[in-house]
Image (cartoon, rainbow, N blue to C red; front, top):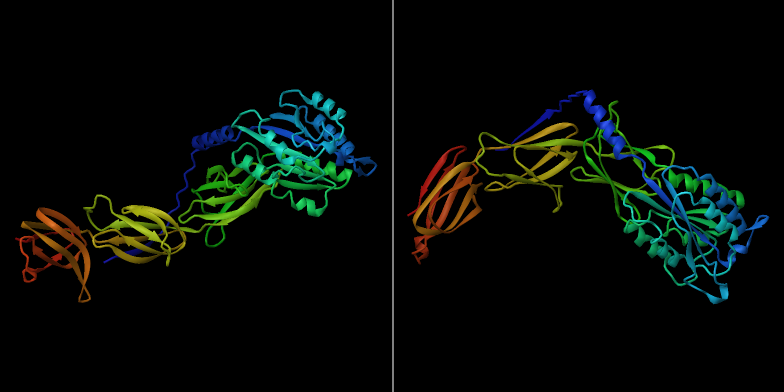
Length: 462
């Protein structure tokens, strides 16, 4: 018979100053600032001559971009570069490969970029997809660097390319983070076409352009803090010690993994994340929970709450177990998909709720259990008994368990000879078999036997 017991959860808080100091030291090392590389991808197609206030779009873009580049001279852990498209061939030639890295990444290249910007004149067509594709080769190979593209354009693709596909492919490969797109004078219909490429910002006036450029650079440069509150059944942020995986919501690429913990003040610890991305957060509880399309804001302490109330399931064998490894399949009610396979004599956390369990003993045991907040639900099964089975002649047949005056199949005895030990749960059983040398149905043997916990039941079948 199964025994169920709910036990109160003991909370033991041990403050170890040395360990805390080491943890903070390791965290500082792990979250040290990475280098950021920003590639400015500038549209110099003929349409950039269109008016924008008292100037044209190219004039505004050159002036404000030059001002921004000059302000970035002494920004630590930052390298910038400039790629331009549509600036060497006239529009009538429709040169769909008219893109060039004018200033590569490097230290102290700001004056060179300012010179190139000053000399630019709009000429040709708009080739965004091919320019993005070529931009992938502009970034030096460095796995510990944030590669960011800032695209400044006033038009949509004119060369039959697919900017969305190129951008997503580069993001999935980890070449670049989600691009920033500054749309200069684009209307709402054009803006929608850039949503799949990256994060779009609308700049319809010179002041708007200036404001947007500042926001984009701020988001590109600043890592942002995030606190994930894992809520219990009462909405309190008391759950912890579980892995969290952060995926890029758009590409599905895995970005970060953290073990959730409390800091030395007893609140969920703060982590640093890149504000460029939109995140899907997977919390690896059993079963897992997730929160999709989480946006975090640069320069702020962000807090995200995720429901993850948990309790414990403790599986035990009453007495000394004879099983080498007894396991239990844990499933959600009415679901064929398993939530976990748990070993006996272990304790595991689960989300609060009801579960169906299948204990892989012989015979298997099927039950329902309820996991409650911060309590231990114990499932205890009896110690098995041993069937000392012996046959000299060899027999074929099966063992059945008697329940409610019916035979329930337990296991087959196929061409058994000699001696064997079979572990069985306590209960009344029946062996139905026939000697292998016999060819008559009437030679069938029916033998009743009882298995008791921790006892050996001999069964000789000649």
